[in-house]
Length: 168
Image (cartoon, rainbow, N blue to C red; front, side, top):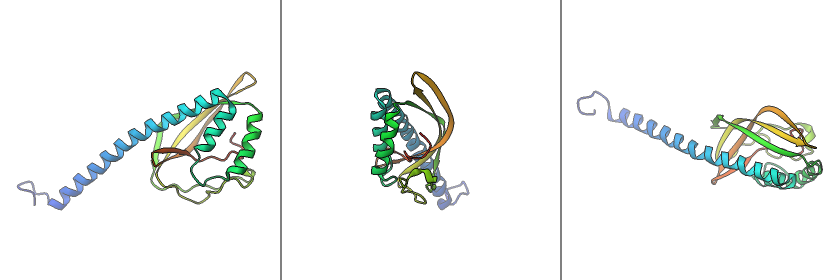
């Protein structure tokens, strides 16, 4: 027992360990939020430069092994031809860490691009709400917010997206 306070030493260590673990996770989340915010700023800068730059940046930021990049590139070429400028708006207040996330199946319109169905990524995975705006022939349109997942692995932010599905 700890002297005079009636708490067993093992119980005290558990409380300290839990508090330490919570503090580490909170600090980790702060750093991750900064990385995620920078990821969105970078993606938006590339899309502001050109549709091609934006989509190439998004493709390069997909989590390894999630999509067949040859199929993705084909779908991206179609999207680039539309010359749509995108702007992504993450709701960082909605961010939640997901301890175990299993990637969903994707609709049939993905042309066989999605390879990650039923798998769990390594790293720290977050769920957040994201809305986007598109500039098409000078007309700005917005789409409602949707849930997206990002993973930070080896200090890189990775997306989980299909370029052939109807999201774009």
